[in-house]
Amino acid sequence: MVSINPVIIPAKNIRFKLAAIILAAWGLVLAPMPACADGTFLVARVIDGDTLVLTGGTRVRLLGIDTPEVGEPWAEEATRSLQKMAMGKMVTLKECARKDPYGRTLAVLQRGGVNINISLLKEGLAVPLLIPPCGALIANPALLASGSAIKERKGIYSSRVFKAVKDRNAGAVVGRRSVVLGRIRNIHHGRKVVHLNFGDNWRTDFTIVLFSRGIARFASMGLNPEDLLGRTVYVLGKVQEYDGPEIIVNRPEQILPVYDDPAASLGHTRGRLDTGGAP
Image (cartoon, rainbow, N blue to C red; front, side, top):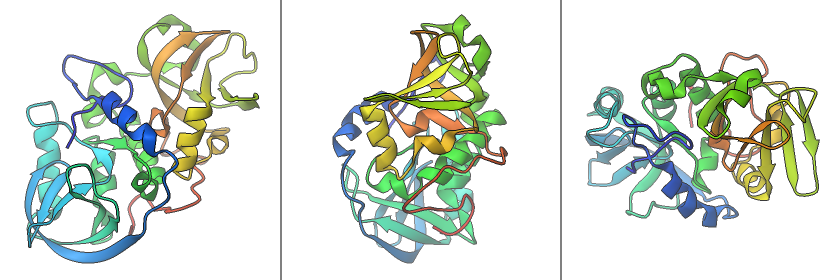
């Protein structure tokens, strides 16, 4: 498990460091989708919130998520939650053919119709960590589940650093890493950039900016930013000023749809999973 910052927020009490993961992962953006194998196995031991050991000794890293490191806030809760869902029980794995740098099997876990990876995200005990190619297996439900958790201020998201600023007030937090909440009202395509606008006046209203790298990252997850049109979202990142406040988005994890928004269902062209169902 890697200690991470969920894309945006350095805080005294939440020392997650996703930046290093982002840099390491950019080299994999255009990697092909791996083959996956299913199987049912007995869980012998839970190491932490996102790592466990099967009988026979295989170490499994829950893909698409990351939980706090030991000693950090919510680490014990994440471990206990995984123990409750999986320890000493038979679980079904959808395994990614590619292993992580530590040789662990990457997989989506399910038990009794419950997607364990997604459950940890819904509880706010994990943040989405979508590294190609395996992250595409869980991208859509991971973002929706995290949108639910941040809206309900659960777990990790109960920290004040995740308190959202409404898009119309984003100008007040220019220069700061923040969470901005609002509805995407129109989309503009430039030659090498896509703007997701939160108002009719792009010179003053809040905007999400996607350059080529961000667009490619969405594509690598089977996601299309245009499917966000009309949706209410939380946007995580540093607010900058350029013809109005904006956040440059490089990763899908920076845009979390509001879970109970009727329109909140990102297009997902491959590896689609339901939020609570079978992988």
